[in-house]
Image (tube, rainbow, N blue to C red; front, side, top):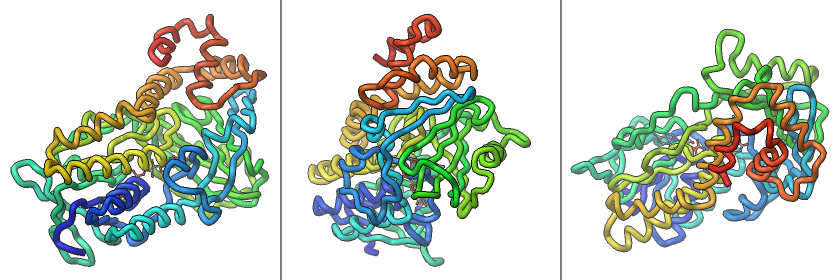
Length: 398
Ligand SMILES: Cc1cc2nc3c(=O)[nH]c(=O)nc-3n(C[C@H](O)[C@H](O)[C@H](O)COP(=O)(O)OP(=O)(O)OC[C@H]3O[C@@H](n4cnc5c(N)ncnc54)[C@H](O)[C@@H]3O)c2cc1C
């Protein structure tokens, strides 16, 4: 590790890896630091991503694809299910990854492009000069080292501290940090190419349970709920254990993880003088689904592209870097976050009865295309009376 780089990337998840790779491919000197001893572990993810979305960044490789998905099912409390046609469901959740290998592959590609990579290395403070971020103080193997860079990219995930240390308000309202638990269950009967989502206030208040296949007889079975719905006997793991006892009583958990997903609005700003914030650290995961792999890769790549042009022009001030902030907000991803936040805020108010009625109303139709947006639009169109209160929502998302 040198003392100075063009770009210092903090965090070796998919966001940091994309940023490092993109910057290195543009000929910049880059260092990526990761506090954990190994890239990709432990995995805190259900590992689902749309096929087309993934292919924007990397060609699929069987080494890190655990399952290919061709259909999705939504099940509401009365058992009504909405099965999405194979040819339309794939875009939303098309692959279940093996992130232990996938994350490593992304970092490997960054290294191959020329980026330095340093694991077991934690950023402990920004280097600030007159309010401008000039790099970070790093701790590794008991040693401390200052590394400078005109641009630092904070890709330090949901528990991000770096942007806050630099003066950006990164607070997540407590109810909007979905709290999750997940088992990798094996020896269970599943449909190996179908993802299943269970909705309902009794089984997953203000959230949902997912079953994402990881092979013929294994699946990530997890839950995300709002912390305001938690209490004694009502932790995510309690809900999940009840669900597993009901649906997969003979399943054997070979991994158990817990984690948080920001389902809030993105940060007010994702840039400061010398600093860019990407991925979960910027709170750009989808507030409706909790999916963040695509969004973090998108923002990581875009941040590096903008940083490269700012470095070339010799201006890495907040205003110059804000091209990144503006670009992601007006991108398809940025618009989807804005829209899905409103949809999420509406859906968490629905009673189980309304959920049942809504899904029943569209359970027999063939959606021409599947995305959370078309699904919600169809629900609204088919339920003009029930959803009178949705007029404002419809107007705001159309
Ligand atoms: C239970 C669960 C299920 C999920 N399921 C899905 C899903 O199916 N599909 C989907 O798209 N998304 C899913 N997500 C969300 C997805 O995992 C995240 O959006 C994604 O990992 C964010 O990537 P990132 O690079 O921004 O952050 P991360 O992947 O969290 O990477 C950040 C990295 O920064 C490192 N770091 C932190 N602080 C420092 C520091 N000071 N110095 C050095 N390194 C540091 C961390 O160790 C970490 O490795 C899920 C999340 C959870 C919790």
